[in-house]
Image (cartoon, rainbow, N blue to C red):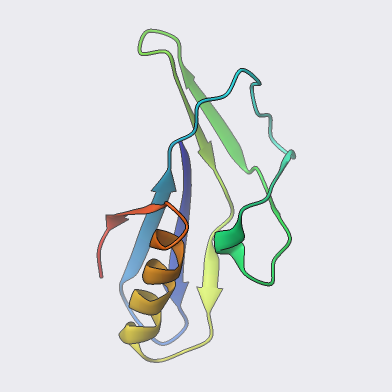
Length: 93
């Protein structure tokens, strides 16, 4: 599962999005991940990887995204953009 935190400069709350993939390759810190949900960003580098061998799961953390806005609705728009590309919101605003 890949996760990413999204915040806005003028909003106290933040949100998190996630996407689950089936893959035979094991990501490592520094690997580049690309997804249409990233918009103008071509990729994000993997910041952290946590492997749970007992559950056969791998959690990949991408760097946080900060939107320059004072409006919580802009965070919700970002969530909708990610969701339109198969991501789920794990912490609603």
